[in-house]
Image (cartoon, rainbow, N blue to C red; front, side):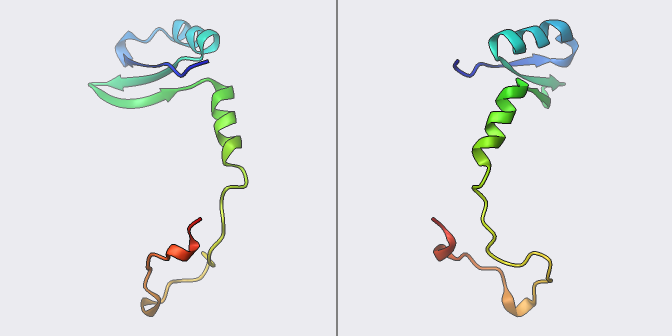
Length: 82
C-alpha cells in the first residue's frame, strides 16, 4: 500500500469519514487550523511499524546523567557515526 497523505481544514473534518478512510485506505491526514498544521492522523499499525523499525537502532555514546563541564565542550565526533 502506497502512502497517501491528505491535508484537510479542521472546520471540514467529519471524524467518522476521516477514520473510515484511514482504516480502509491507510490514508494519513494533516489537519490544519487557519492554514497551520495542528494534527496528524495516521493508521495505528503504520505508526507501530515505524516504531518497530527504530527498535535497536539507538546507541549510548556517553553518560547523559552527569552535567557537562565547560571544558568538555560538545564537539562533532565523526568516529561515533556509522
